Amino acid sequence: MLEKWQLRSRFAAELSRMYGNEVPAYNTLVDVTLQVNRDYTATRPGSERWGTLGRISAERHGAIRLGTLGELRDVATIFGALGMSAVGFYDLRLTDPPVPVVSTAFRPTDPGELALNPFRVFTSVLTTGDKRFFTADLQRRIAAYLGTRSLFSPDLLRLAAAAQRDNGLPEPQATHFVDAATRAFRLGTGPIDAPWYRELAHISPVAADIAGQRSTHLNHLTPRVLDIDDLYRRMTERGITMIDRIQGPPRWGGPPLLLRQTSFRALAENRPFREPDGSVHDVPVRVRFGEVEARGIALTRTGREIYDALISSPDTAVWEDAFPSTEDGLADADLAYFTYRRDGSRIIREPIVYEDFLPASAAGIFASNLDSPGGFVSDADSADYGQDRLEGAIGHPILDPFELYRTQQDASRERTHP
Image (tube, rainbow, N blue to C red; front, side, top):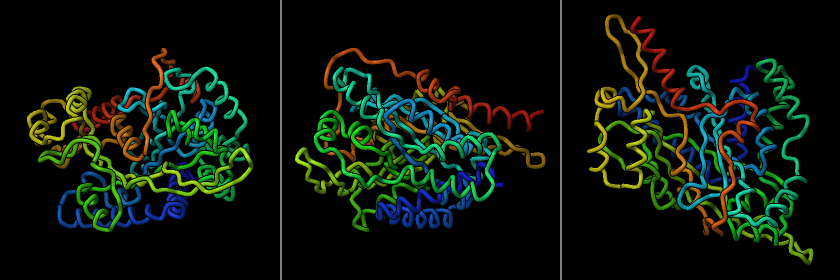
């Protein structure tokens, strides 16, 4: 019997192999990330407080885009078989530029499970009913198109349900499940309806990527790096075109905060397009890119409010004025989360690493990798795509990241301060 975490670990590794074959520059990104992490830990004693080198080297987050709440329901079943729960709600329609999706992230929630394998998937769903992007006629045609496709086979969903029920799968079912789950996110090879894709891309390249073809795929698979500035420099030196900046706060003298992200520029990948006359020809499409992330300390709600107010500022001095530059200062001001453990008569405090995402950074990565990011095309009323709609599809509540971190902090305090 393979437990859920073992299935998760296998799935993450198989996705990484598949994505490396589809996007060779991803392999370069992984190689450089590993070099940076090795050099960083070798010269900075105590850096494994942010995660062991083994964990960080294996750490990935993927990103997928779905068209319907029904597809989200199926994905929740598959990820549930891997011990991954929905955490956080992100409305990317509120970002600049607005993107016609709402999102959640599937990930392990228990610290022990995260230590075994921290794989997470940022999962977006098209907001087809939002009239600011889509006319009533286009909404109808998108729904009809998406209603004819099936992303996940009945056999895959049956195995996923069995893994959820039994907390794992025996062989050979475990291998069948991982193989089928991996194939479900492989880049499609069938011809794309060219006029349909172009009509959607005129509104949003993200909408075209979601509803303009018969399959879904990984948009990126993201390794974790300990020094993202060093990685950006090394990738550029290798001749890899990076996006124009690192998303998130500037480098500063205090502890790393929340999340910093960057990526290499989305590559032009030839995809077969079918024209109305029946002819098929290759067209370069830019929708997939190589993202990398540096994770820092999880902030409390108060800390997050300060962070969000400053996120557009690249001025290091502004950040240093707003945040204490030490972990002691962050803890005393109740701006960040920590765990506590007893070592003899001493109590050792450790930062809780941020395991989630930031909508502004996600939208910034999206926009930086699209030739035409799109945006609202009308001033019609928006449709309600709140957290409750996603929860209805998933079948259980979406967990609050702040509550997860607070619970972890409080539990460690109770153990060390009986």
